Length: 385
Length: 86
Image 1: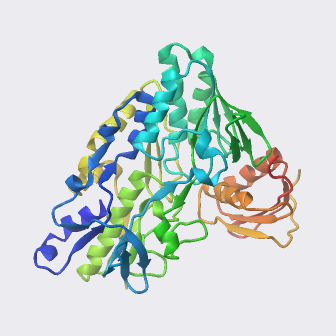
Image 2: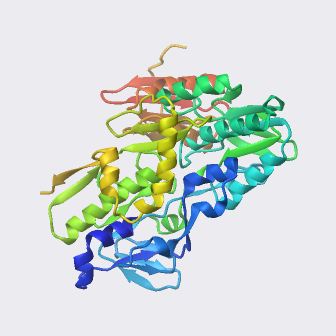
């Protein structure tokens, strides 16, 4: 996305050989990660949420089919896995976050999850299809994790699934969370909790998972509590990318210290971080990554063209949130605007579905005018001294 | 429990100033996960929910709030870890 934006807006400079946009990634596939939930709980074909990376890149982008081994921000170079050193004038780091089930003893063996891959998500569908009754525990095994609504969404979908199968009375559903309420932000929790109650979903709060014993089918919390289960579906804690940690550019938790407005890596004028890789205080979601990419790429374009404009992200988040029964809400906020209560509706569900179909087109960088029409301004422009 | 105001020297300082809910409580949980019994975690926060969330967590988990100090532009919350795990 960031590479496409740069390529789209620097076409003249690329054509005349002044600029090259290089994407360092050996990933063959691009995955629409919000689709994991539908693979896991609605039997969507995994192949429907995966596209060939090459088909999504603009032709002006030069893809280097290797991963980065080390990022040398002082030396302005990226060392590739082959050992080749690639010098740069401007860098955007978009290395994301990685689910880390092994951080919690027993979790990887005991729990299914819908955050690691389409295949892992598919295992959930295969399992719930065979499940005829018992205690299903869904929740958050550790923080931070990407897509904050997804644990709640999964719980609504599990409930929908067993209702539709006509065996809901044979299934007890419990949602576990380390937070004080069903959703961390209180206004959203006020929407979620009554719906959980109405559906007979129990909520266990302040449960920071310490370990899981798969033979006893029990999970234990740091707070000293335990819970038994028959089927365990947990969002693992996430960590920063290995290359970030190996390069020594992370904070103590594996995230890149980043200016939350300009998206510059702290201490560097020409290196940026976007998406899950950063430590900025917004949700780790695809929408925020997209909006941050717009800011970082605009700042690079401004620098390439020796302009004084500095783009500053306003922290806008906009997370679609399925609440079952064909209804959805959104989690909307920014640095200066706390999230507000938004009631779920069928219209918002239709908007979420429409965005899922539209997603692939947004990666081209050609549709930002439409996103801007929907979101309004998600950045401001200032003049540097 | 009232609102104690006498601070002690913290073992771990968690600076969550500038983050909104659930930033402070998330940072506190990460520190708690890495702490030992007897450690004092000091949470610095600007989010108004940090006080009540931390108090509720301490009450539920059996950990001890040592001090809640309102500074000019943030709050300092000190928690002594007295219970962790089974």
